[in-house]
Structures are given as structure tokens and as C-alpha cells.
Length: 188
Ligand code: GLN
Image (cartoon, rainbow, N blue to C red):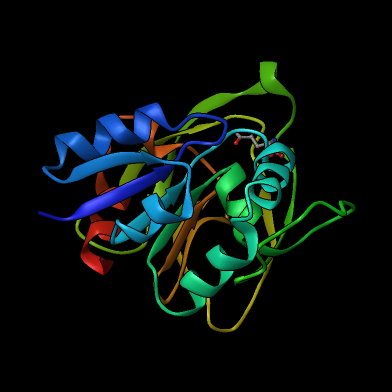
């Protein structure tokens, strides 16, 4: 069985663990390098990207994680996870892994109370749409040439793939739709 880790330093890792368990994989919360090295794929959940970034630095995980991802560890970032993977978060000097060739604008969909659930258009696979929850979500404002768009909302990219890196600006783990998680598992 595939072993998948969900980074559990801060934020919404539990719903990812629950969704993965429903997909018949072994899912673990991970906090240390040894735990990361024991899984075949890693999810970076939503939360506060500045806090998760600082904790990655404090725990000595920051550079090793970049190395693992560059060496081919499949990763899937949602919301704050997308921000952490990106090259650049406009106007912010927070630590970023910079492995995914996109720039993002944090909180571009408004504040917590402006969170919303909507349908996004899926551009791969057999489903045309998925429900999606946006919570203080980032917008992808620049896409590198090697980045493929997997989902769109109002014409903007909201889920993307670059090799074995997946990222979404919304929270699929808070819906019933497992399409992105299944796509991620197919990369592992
Ligand atoms: N706004 C948060 C940040 O900038 C992300 C919100 C989320 O992950 N739901 O890190």
C-alpha cells in the first residue's frame, strides 16, 4: 500500500488524512525528516503559509524538503501549501520552497468571512466540474511554461501541475471530490 504523509506543523492536515484514508492508502501526519523519508508522497495542507514556512526553517526541514522535491518526491500543496511551493508571493518576503514555477498573490479572494464554495472547471480526466472551497485563497498570477492548468475558475487557473508537483488554490479535501487526490496518488 502507498504511504502518504501530510505535513502536520500547522493548519488543516486532518481533512487530508481523512480523504486519503478513504482512498485506501496509508496516510500519516508527518513532522520530522525521518517521517518524511518514510512516505512516498507528501501533502502540504492549507493553513498560514508564513507560519508553516517559519516552522519548516526552525525544524531544519526547509532545505532537505527542497532537495527531496527536486529529487522527485511527489508533493501536493493546497492553498497555503501552494503558496509555499511557489517561486514568489507578491509583496511578501516569507520563506518559500520555490520549486513550482508560479507567482501567487496571497489572500486575493478576500478575507476569512469572504470564503466561498463554488464549482471549478476541471481540464483533465472525466469529470467536467468539481465543488471547491476557497478560504483566504491565493490567486496564481504568473504561470511558468512547464506548468499545466488542471482547473479553472472564472477563467483563472486554480489547480496546476508541474511534473510531480500538484497545487490548488482551493481546498478539495473539504469537499467530497477526490479527483485531485486520486491524480496525486497516480503520480506517487
Ligand atoms: N491566506 C493563507 C496564507 O496566506 C492561506 C489560507 C489557506 O490556506 N486557507 O497563507
